[in-house]
Amino acid sequence: MHVFRPVGVTGILPCIYHIHGGGYVMGKVSDYDPLVRPLIADLQCVMVSVEYRLAPETNFPGPIEDCYAGLAWTIAHAEDLGIDPTRLGVMGQSAGGGYAAALALMVRDRGEYALAFQHLIYPMLDDRTCTAPPHPYAGEFVWTGQSNRFGWSSLLGHGPGGDDVSPYAAPARATDLGNLPRTYIATGALDLFVDEDIDYATRLIRAGVPVELHVYPGGYHAFDVFADGPVSQQARRDSHEALRRALA
Image (cartoon, rainbow, N blue to C red):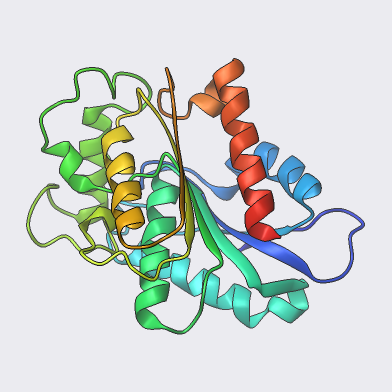
């Protein structure tokens, strides 16, 4: 576990439980240091990031259980960490967004804890995207259909698109999305995940979950990180302000 706290700030603070991205097969917490430190300084919050095991060395359910164990540790040590567990939500980008959504489902179903929000940035939610007809425009840049199939196959330990995939692996497989925390979803119009992200947001809304959805024109996967044009800047501002409201 990695704990980030604003320099010189004392007292009890809200907390973001963060899960990094990397297609389920790569990435580490330190990759996000340049994003994390300015964020927590401005939002005046604590961030706890989990270093979960990667596929294919560890298949499902190992990584999501790591995420759940990290959340349990965070809540158990809330007093020592100086965080308010009633103002604790989960955030993730890409595969981390998929794990964040899966964790929200797991937390709801196990009933041991509660999350104040889920903040999902171009989340990787549905293995069936690998077997769906190709999108005419999306998925040509950064994270392609070939990458997606490799990531899902590595996590599941078998090919994607079958009938036996758990919603704790692919949250879009969940049949009941009720009683989940308030949700922020952002994706790009050219992101391979655009259809699954919009569909998940729509189903959450129909289940009565408060949802804020953004689809950014011209946005490919991780456009807000790899580019610094007006659309990327707007995406970062929207995400930032949504977190500020959620942590309040």
